[in-house]
Amino acid sequence: PSIQRGIEYLIRTQNADGSWTEDETTGTGFPSVFYLKYDIYRNTWPLLALATYQKALERKHYENNDHLNSRVNGTAPHLATVVAAR
Image 1 (cartoon, one colour):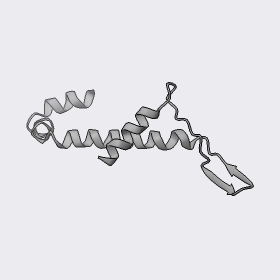
Image 2 (cartoon, helix red, strand yellow; image 1 turned 135 degrees about the horizontal axis):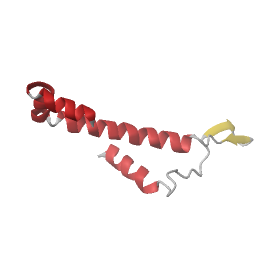
Image 3 (cartoon, one colour; image 1 turned 60 degrees about the vertical axis):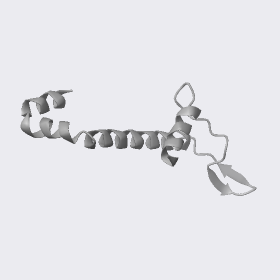
């Protein structure tokens, strides 16, 4: 549930151009003197999280279809060729 909420948050807060807004400072520098802002972080980490989640969903979908997977990978090799071509 917490992962799902995090993914929903990322999707909900994504800008129309695909980026995310970051108003906070991402690096400390010297507190009360200067702060660093790593502009790439605001897009890199959300994209990495979304890609990792997507990959996990694909793997889970594949594992949940064992009855189909055995046919594609074993007893029906011609289907494996069709699937691999996609």
